[in-house]
Length: 327
Image (tube, rainbow, N blue to C red; front, side, top):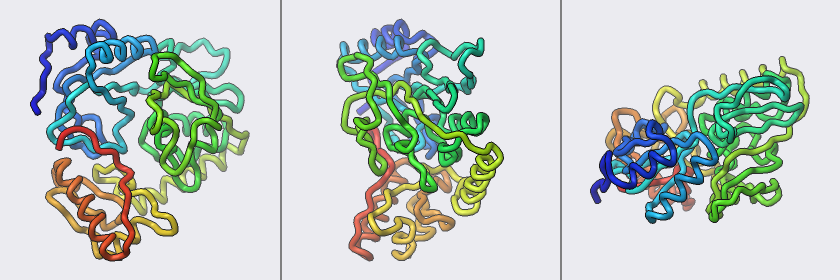
C-alpha cells in the first residue's frame, strides 16, 4: 500500500490546527525515530506538546477513522521498510528541567508531558521524559530506587507499558500511580495495584489507554552509593552489551527458567546474520543492525533465531520487540 497523504491535504491541516504547524510532518522516515535506525515513512507524524493538544489530535484522528500509534523513544520497536499507514504520535521531546516544589521554574508545557518534578521522596514524571532522566533526577536528590533505569534508553511512557527493568529493578517497584487518557478521551488516575504490572507487560498493553505521567515513591539514600551503583551498572552494560551498534536492547523475553542469550548461543547462532542484521557475538540476546540492515533483515533474522532455538532446545523464544507497519 502506498502513502495516501500530502503536505496540504485536509487531515494534515486539521492535525496542524490541533497540534501546531511545526509539530506535524508527512512522510516522516521512521528510521529517525527508532533505535534500530530502520523503518520507512509514516503517513503522518505528530509531536504533541500538551495534554490538550493530544486530546485534540485524537479527536481529529477518530473523526477521520485514521489509525494511530503512540511512540515513545522507539527503543523497543521495529517499523517495516514500507512504513506505517496512519499517524504516529509522540510525546517525547528535548531535555526537560528538573524542578523542586516551590522553585520558580516553568515546565516545558502545562501538561508536564516531559517534565520531571521532585517533591521530597516522590517523583512525578511526564510520559515523554526519559528513563535515564528520572534516574539522574533521583540520584541528584539522594533518592534510591531508580538506579536500574539509568541505562535504559526509553521514555517513561514506554517504560510503563513494558514495565521496563534491568539488574533486578523494575518500574512497578517504584510506581504508585499512573495518569492516563482513556478510550473516551477522559483523564484518569490509575493506582499501581490496577496497573497489572508483570514481566514486560502492564495494563497499558491490554487497555486502550495512553500514559500521560506517573508518580513514583523512592527512599532516601546515600548519594555517593547511588552514584556508585549507577556507575557499576553502566560499566557492566559497556562490558557485556554491543552498545556501538543500533539495536533494541534485549530482543527476546527471558523464557522461564532460562536465558534467551544462552539458548541462542547453544544453538550456534553467535554472529549469525541475515543481510545487514546480526546476532551479536558480544551478547547473543541482542540482534544488531551491523551493516545497513533493513527492517526485513531484522525481522527475518528474529524468525530464524526462533526457529533454530526451538529446533535445538524445544523452547520458543518470544520477541520483546514490537513489530509495526508494513514490511
